[in-house]
Image (cartoon, rainbow, N blue to C red; front, side, top):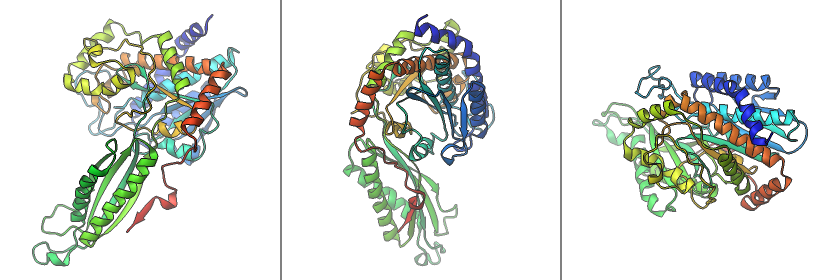
Length: 476
């Protein structure tokens, strides 16, 4: 029996267990740092499969690390399980039907992500147990990918440094292996404090924190001209100082995202944004404090491992969707304007080398494109997988789990994360990662190439973009 045939057979045996884990986590729909039931369900499933599980990994209550094996190279799989606020939606329903008003939902498919990575770890474990390969396998349950950068916290504690290879994936509407980078990002809250006063009777007695916040935004808008073109700044008000126009606001706060292609560039831009905030405080005679909420590094795709993933995807093929899946996908597509579908596929086109025209007319993706290594290009988003990629050779694939053109962070994605479409994509992702991992574990030469390229890409090692706890906050 070939390795592919073994994995196909093992996946059939484990399919329902993999999908049941997705369904549990999908139903729990817990926000970042609150994934207690999701983490425990994942830990119990791993223990049932013979893994030794460490809870509270890196002193994070919802982080877990599971290990199996005693000899050979160590292969890691990254899983996630946090949901997004306000994206509750009925499972598999192609109409916007909220399951629970105001509740969270898996609009980025992290329930599938965790289940698929769990599946890959289990399949590789079975190959170790039956003597097909000699290796050790570790599964990482990573909390708070959304607004938390859980992997950065785990990386800072050294949880990934010993790994010979890391594989992960993300649910998507198209199939490809990620050969691009991502943007490093830092989330910072800037809080201004002024002096309240009667806005008509004695405005000169007050110092407006809201004025300071607005001036900071103006200053950052002028700063944009003098940043590198690939860097990005965006913000939201956390506190507007109240609702009474006749009161000079004594408090206001902004949440900024600071992005750049490399983590070093992001940290430099962070210092420049701090100066703008300080200037706004000086102009208004207010005080400003800043607090880093989260931060993660850019992603570094490892060419040898990524090529293995792409070869494995080609061998196993795209998810085998049937006619019922196709019809359901068409119903979801009908809820998304074509312009949005095209924009949602822009990252897929960049990574796969395909044009939007190659996807037109399809409800579900059937491509298995060759790997294109282009780390000089960055997807216009960020992920804390980047921090893992600074610690060990890392490869990431995307598998179709929803209708082509479906955007992330939408009710459509939530619905399809618990559908027949999502199930087939998730199981296929588990098989693809397991096959690539088994090939890597069986080839010392391949792992050596991966390590060699990793050392070239990360000559100075890993520097965590999260400041130390005592340096997390500052003030003027």
